[in-house]
Length: 261
Image: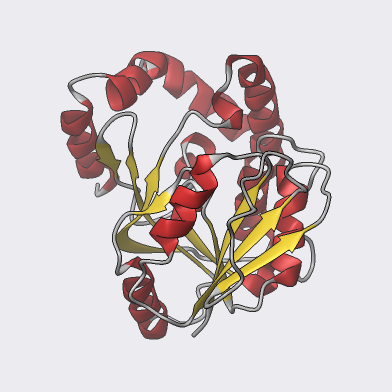
């Protein structure tokens, strides 16, 4: 079973080298590290050597999601995982563990796990099944998802979405392709956070795209119900507790217990 670990980059500086070094520590050997560079000018790719599992593809792209689509088109693996510059695998045996899960549970097409959020210094655990509410509130981040590459055969990321194309892609597979993602129980990614979607100027667009996509796949009634629930349960406060407070570990444990119900 071959994996394509995809890192898209443009003028990422030292973060690219850090992510490459991390990926190359994987103990599972049947993988490629495909670096898709959008013609960087900062010298960050100059030290990248195409040897071993490393492949470098350099060409212009229109956006991060366009770059990700280009990378999948060039990928040789059966499964792809996107690891952004500055993000890492949580442990050296992540790919080995994932391969074991896929071999035992073939045909699920999307496999997902948990992520360590560096900002909160905490592992965030995902639910063991994907429900409507999970699809509205918080799907697994793409660094913690392993995708069957053939999911891109029909259509990849829709690039009109600048921030939430990965969210739309996930929901499209669940609601129109009858894909049933499998929870692996593996901590897959060490997630840096603070990326493009989390900058102040993009938060408004992020909310607009999220609402548009959620209504498309869940329907207006469910979206209205779930939005009301977030207000009633003080979602902004819960987000702070989960990501930036001393109580993040306690909150995650409580959330895991509720997910199991």
